Every structure is written in structure tokens, then in C-alpha cells.
Length: 259
Image (cartoon, rainbow, N blue to C red; front, top):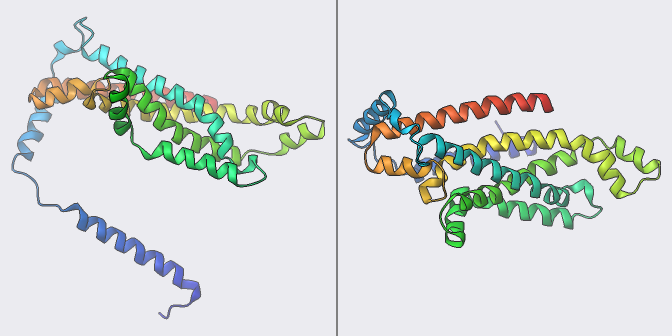
């Protein structure tokens, strides 16, 4: 087939994708599976099948239930911060809110900066600033999620129905009137749905932040793995799976009611 202007761009995209895959596979540097892989896999599976039920609750505050509640609390507060502070950044980043492009481009740049650093990197930074513990985890999830929530919010604002806005303006309303009586009524259910969805993701993220000392269930998980206490690892993994499943079910129910 002879390339022409019509199929040159698709061909270039296909070639770029193939080269990207080839480069990614080459960069992996895969050297094979270690001899201990099967042993570790059997040990983890044995731990899940024979978990340490005594660790579920002992009243010490360091048991599974207490730390899973702390993990969910970290995720909830982090999501609350991002859901709240993501709104002004979203209005700044939304293109249809400005007559010129500079403010929206600046807002999108800020959101990109927020999203650049993963939660675990931010957790390490905040541990150095505020000390180890759940407070660092809340800040890490909150700051990272502002970038994600702001992006979702901005895209939602750009796709709003402008009919109510035009009706408020036609009746003599100003910018604040259009915000409170035309835009926010459309936005609130969708924004709440996004916040609930982000909370699901935050619960999973909060489960591993303890690995670096940012509170939650991740701390005993990494300690148990290092000590090869597979029965303790098993009950922690079961606790994480049960918690994430419950959160998914409840959040899915809430999102259906909102949207």
C-alpha cells in the first residue's frame, strides 16, 4: 500500500505505538523468575488460608480493626480535602469560564503539578515535614487527589448545559447568580459522585502508605512480611480485601443514588 496524506498519520501512530512497546519491553530487563518465588507464593497462600485470627481485635489500638479504621479515616479526610479544594482549581482550569486562555492554562498547569507526585512520594516528603503518622498520609492523599479531582471537576464544568446560565443572565443575574443558581445545581450531584469514586481509590492508596510510615495498615504489613510472619500477612490481606469490597459496594450504591 502506497502511503499518502490520508493514511500517513495513522501509519505514523501505529509505528510510534510499536516502537513504544518495543522500548518498554527492552527497558524491563527481565532476567527470569527467582527460585524463591514459588516458596514465597506458597507461604503467602498458606498465610491467607491459615490467618492469625487473634490479630483481628485485641484492644491495643494496633490490631487489624483499629488500623483498618485508621486507614479508612486517612482516605476519607484526604478525599474531603481534595473534594473541597479541587473546586476553585477546577473553575480556574475550566476553559469555558474565561474569555482568554491564560487563566485556564495556568489552572491546568497547577493541577498537573499536583498530579505529578504519587501519594507515596508525597507521604515521604510530608513525613519529613510533619513527622510519621496518619497526618502525613492525609496530606499526601489530599494534595495528590486535588490534581485528580480538579481535572475531573474542570471537565465536568466544560460540559455543563449552558441553558440555565443563559436564563439567569437574561433575567438580570450576575456572575455569582449564574454560579449559585445555574452551575452548582448541575454540578453538585456529579461532583459528589466523583468524590465517592475517588474515596474508593484513596482507600487502596492509604493501605500502602504505612509502608513509609504514613499511618494505616501498611506498617504492620511490611513488618510482617519482613519477619516472614505469613499468618499475620494473611489476616492483613484479608482485612484489606474485605474493607475495599465493602467500600466499593457502599460507594457504588451511593453513586447510583446521586447520578
